[in-house]
Image (cartoon, rainbow, N blue to C red):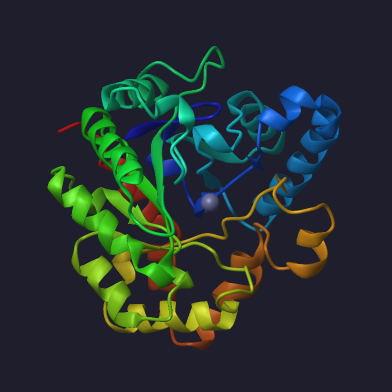
Length: 314
Ligand SMILES: [Zn+2]
């Protein structure tokens, strides 16, 4: 058992319960709202977020890891209010997406490390919310600027002990590039989730990830492309069959509001891309494919708890 930080304060890992490891409350491009504030109706978005999070709670989800990085509109005050009003336990991230912001282009990497560490140890801005996970991303390939973010993430991880959860481009097998860099930085891969692994149709790629010690984040379930939910469930069942149930986490990568997709599209074209698809539709698919209740508990409860419990710096 360990005490970690959620958006609403300290959280015992014993109380995490059914945990979605890679979701978002908001995904935004903040400069738009600095210039055009009328484009974001905060009160309406809050009502929407609370309603969606309440539905997830009703479906049995207790904890959600919000992997929104600094440069995709991370809003700790919004997340904290939505968490408080809905009852969802939400863990907030620090870190950056795959395009390094211009701000850091000519600055020393240590500045990135220090800001990530400050988010984790002191809190994000004046929000009072502390980050408890580090997000980094590699797409479409590992270029030198991207590698800087990964190495900074690794250093902040080792300085604080909070886990790393990534975004990858599975078709480019960039999860293995991340594993290589993390190894070079001395990262214990037991504390890393290689995200979006379920976008891959390549079992040997996923086996190389789990054999490195890292977790396979099967965390885009409900996005119909590049893989249907049935295909994703099939791959999860195949990994479980091979004995890797203790190396898999589940999630949707869904959000209450994502501004890079026009309104109406997520609801009509992506109807299963929401927080309740796994508990309501996908767990039954896994059971049909022979995954036991013990293994389902590993994927949804035990593995997330273990990832967050290893909280010592090293
Ligand atoms: Zn994501």
